[in-house]
Image (cartoon, rainbow, N blue to C red; front, side, top):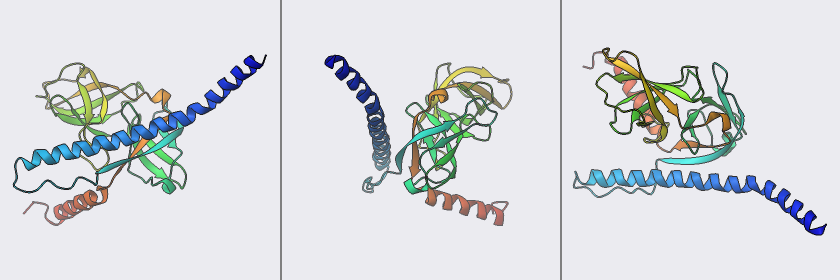
Length: 244
């Protein structure tokens, strides 16, 4: 009887310990993501130094860092889907931050409170993501077509794009939100007429939105600087619409 009680007690304790273990694994995963970002930055710097006579820049300050958050609400069957996280401004979360999980891109933060945040899911037609083919670097815009929570469309690809079914689609890095190279999905089919200037690919997403539990919010330490530069370019274009 004592053995049976101890065994039951041990099973209950193990069950409640699972969340702590899971939290620890997600923290470690976030640290690994940051380390990957630092390694990519260092690799880029060493490549650049081969073409210059300058010293290798200091890479101690990585452009991206990650905050672990838990999904407390999620929809996948609506025309416009959103996700709610248990982290907010008190944790350093703010609008326009990218969100990923262990498999791929999840969405982007839209609204933030002190202790929670609302995320525009990738399964939302209002969210468009700049992506490229890992094998060839051809890029386009990923958008959900409202059909399946497992698939999206990679649009605006030039007609001369070279690809194969099964090729991996990753983030392009052409924004201040997501680093380049984050996995998004794999090509499953080609859609549209290749005789037109642009065509579309169907992509099976890596992220499983039906089982989202833990995610990482991406903070770009250089985002404000990049946005200021972009704003300056837009102002210049307004003052000089003909580029003269």
